[in-house]
Length: 230
Picture 1 (cartoon, rainbow, N blue to C red):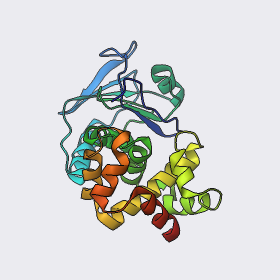
Picture 2: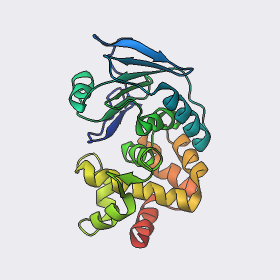
Picture 3: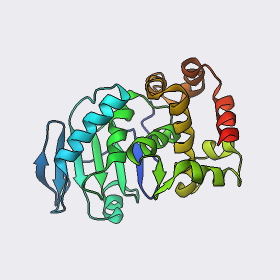
């Protein structure tokens, strides 16, 4: 896997799978709570430690995967503070290898999904974010069902182009489109199969071969079938 950080700017979250330069505790942050798998740091903002620990266990069960290690959760006040710490303006940022979450929320389901899914494999940011929206945001984006938003987006541009340009287009389009596609895979093949697909992808270069081997259909064909059915 490349040493260059893989990131996706968004209004809600992003995932970075390469190294970060953060110390054990950022300046001004103090340890405010601990659970079995989390250490929570803040400057006074509230954290929901027990809720986060319970949700991590839920995601492990859903994905059939065990989170390895101990995560640091930095509770920021605003997306601007997240940006100051990570370089990316977002509600949340997850550094998977470092097992580190930076969030403007005391509890952030979307980012906790990244902790587990990021250890499974790396089929690409589009799949990582799509899965995190489906599980962590209940397949909604800004309170609207992702299928509804994706249907509108597909009237403006081809499905293949939207998914291929995930990191270049507006997050308000990219995230619900990706989530709608991932949701279609879960509905058709089951979440366990999606987990298997992640495991088969140590890097995005293996995506197409792993997709066809796991789901029994070519990636491009699955995209077209989803776009026609939505």
